[in-house]
Every structure is written in C-alpha cells, then in structure tokens.
Length: 233
Image (cartoon, rainbow, N blue to C red; front, side, top):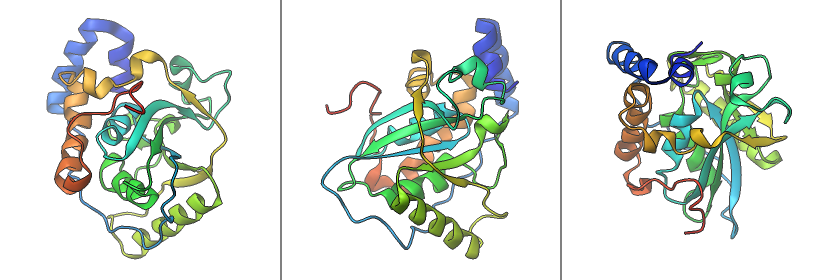
C-alpha cells in the first residue's frame, strides 16, 4: 500500500502520521527543464486532448492546472475497463489502469510538444518503472496515452531524442500507448493538491512539482489553478 493510499484509507490519524512520515521521507527530486521536442504539432484552432500518467494523479493534475492554455485537467483512470475503474480496485494494481490525467488544452497557447516537455521536466520521473517516489505499482506507471497517430509519433520521437542525448541518468521507461478510454476519478480526488496543500504527502511530493513549473516555465505558469468544473471560464 502506498503512503498516499494509507492516508486516504485510515482517516485523520493517518493524515498526521503521513505528515510526520513525509517530513523525513521526501521523494521529491530536483526538477530540470529538458530540451523541447524537435517535432511538434502544427497549431490548430480547436481544443485538443492528451491523457498522461506519471505516478499519483494528484500531482500531475496539480501541475497542469497551473499551465496557461490548459482548459481542464481532470484525474482519472486509463488502461483498463469501465467495470473496475474505481480507486480501491485500481489501488490493487491488478486492473490494468494507470492513475491518469486528461488534459484539454488550447494549442494556440501551449502546444502538444510543450505539454510533453513540461511532463518530462516537472510531472514525472520517466526512468522509474511501475512506481513514482513512494508510490509503487503498475497503477503508478509513466505512460502517454496518445490520442492519434500524430501524437504517438511525436511522443515516441521525443523519447528517442531525450534518450539519445542522455538527458536523464537512466533510460526512459515511459510508454507511449494508444488511447482507448478515460474514466474520471471520484470527486474527492479532483483538485486535491490545491485543496489540501498542508497534507504532508502533497507538501513533500506535489507542491515542489508546481514550484518547479513556476521556476522552469515562467511564461506558461498560471498562479491560480484552473480547477475542475471551471473549463471555459
């Protein structure tokens, strides 16, 4: 069971224990801006969508809710079936799902390639297999669920580019899979990083990612998170 799963499962006492644990067991790694992809999509006049996974969806959602041009970032599950797309079942690591975030963005403001650059720079450690920091299991794997053949080709070329340049200290294990379905997570998971900044897990693992976004991508950083349900505002 992950530290985050324990916090949700055992209530207030676990929140206190989790905060104490996190103060002495931070897994947040220093972020570094990676090179932009050489290939990118041509800007389109309509919103686009990409689904990514890279550990606990709280932090990934929190990062992209602060990116200018992102219309909505919603936590959910991809890679498995609708029947068992529920937190307690996904948490077993046996359903095939990955905790994912569906990102709807305006490519005239932030391109698909820039979304990928932020993802690899800030949102995930692409060298960790079936885990991210304190969270272990295939449900925390790093994966890009490409919406179409163009997205898939660009993401695969980008990974090859970063690997060839030895940007990271180990090979990238992030998968690029074709998108099939996305199932929104339970309501209490949405906007979690924004609503619970004092949670020990959030403070140690997720807020540093948002701060890294502000530091590394100042032109794209949005101080106020675009919360679920505010799309179009």
